[in-house]
Amino acid sequence: MERRLLMGNEAIALGAVRAGVTCVTGYPGTPSTEILETVARQKDGRIYVEWSVNEKSALEVAAGAACAGARAMVTMKQVGLNVASDPLMSLNYVGVRGALVVVVADDPGPISSQTEQDSRHFGLFAKLAVFDPSTPEEAYLMAADAFACSEAQGRPVLLRPTTRVCHSYASVTLLDELPRRAPEGFHKDGGRWVIFPRLSYQNHLKIESELRALSDAFSAYPHNALTGRGRLGIAAGGVSYPYVREALADIQVDCKLLKVSTVPFPEALGLSFLEGLDEVLVAEELDPVIEDALLRLCGRRGLRAVVRGKGTGDMPNAGENTVAGVRLAVRRFLGLPAPEGGEAAKADGEAGEAPSPPARPPVLCAGCPHRGAFFAVKEAVGRRRAVYSGDIGCYTLGNAPPLDMVDTCLCMGAGLTMAQGLGRVEPDTLHFAFIGDSTFFHTGLPGLVNAVYNGADVILCILDNGTTAMTGHQPHPGIGRTASGAAAPRVDIHALVSSLGVTALARVDAFDLPAAKRAVAAALGTRGVRVILFEGPCIAVDRGGAPCAVDGDACTGCGRCLRQLGCPALARAADGRAAWIDPVLCTGCRLCAALCPVSAIGGGGRPC
Figure 1 (spheres, rainbow, N blue to C red):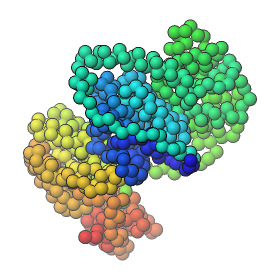
Figure 2: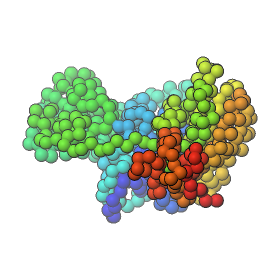
Figure 3: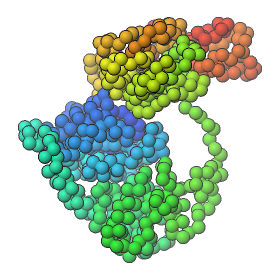
Figure 4: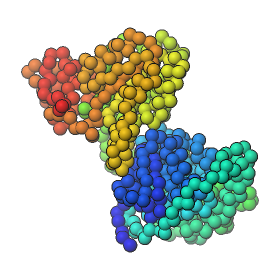
């Protein structure tokens, strides 16, 4: 056995490899991305790995493999589960022959997401078993448990790590691989694999019966545990459990502690926990799933224990739990004084004795091609009324001043379709939609087809920077490379859009400001579905050329470059008058040079 320092996501990946996974699919999304990347790095010829175009496709590919008897895994973040929900709901009714583990990384905070969804609710809604690890070590072990449960049940299961489990590190003992079983292949059986209403009704009855049996089985599951004694009890799940353990480590008070790591709730274990208790505190992220289960159990069994948590205001209803916050809640529950020093203030969200960090609003990187696209559109539109619908990606940062070029942002692919709806209500307004290359493949294509088919009047700006930038530069169909690094057919966005019959299509270098403005101006002169493909590499893919520099004698100090571009490489010189360019940050894109009214900026230029 080997011990290795692993990120939680790496532990999940290696746990799946140990369990004999043979097909891994997914779509990148923080905090889940490193799981699939870790599997791909194993270069294990027994495992097929792919970045799919979206979560729905990823789940359906993995489902096909699982129906053919393989152990398959699909990875995504919590909002990606919304995209995959249609096949997942039906798949639980149809079932699988092998095993299918759906890893859904929840993002309390949220740190890098649109929502704070709790995927345990989705498990309850879809009637799926859910495994909720509290540490990277546990996530490693639970991966194999999830596969075993899925195979035994013949249904998909969810593995639900949260951000602090995904991205924290721990020393993990790597165990020997479990025995592998070759997939049996697909067995034709129309009565099982083709979902009809009568089949759904019969399978619904089976699912309910299986969930009751799973609740009993989970009461003996080693990662659900009951310790301690007394008339007070604390229940916790996920990363909140080690927080509670840390809070109780230096407290000499009798207290029961229940650890819950699964859905369905282990009722027999829960009853043992509630026996003889006067009060219970529940610590969990994000929603009161354990809390509600204990309340229902008290109600059905006539138990008098008072259950405290989110519903009573004893625990926060939004955001991450923290070590300091849980410690304060535990001490209050046990009737102990608050921690000394600044700990209580920190738990309540105050800075305490530590100084506040300087504010650093998110901005587009220096040399980002999206800045050129946004600025070209803004300059060409001028004072005409326009609404700019954005999308999910780096370019969402175009909403920040001084660009102010993202008026809406809902979910992946929604910018183009929302622009169509806005245009139906305000037909005399210009309606732009911005979407990135990876997002275009993810869910942008159906929106573009919808626009052409229904005769929308909209200008779509596809911002092609040659990578899936925001989640860590994963490949996509337009790059010509797979998740494992192998060469693949490259889907040409320009040719694809051209085939759809749009009114007008232009292709332009996002760093060529005059040409980009001309392309936008041409689009403004027509109606219908107009598409502008702005191309320019992400600086993480292509660092660019030599930095630009300001001629301090020629610069008039007008500040136009500073006021209009918002580039982090631009600042005032030490004299407070002339502009200055940070040579470390500047990539030589020359947008500022194209903007300067007195030609005071030189140098730069991207290599050929």
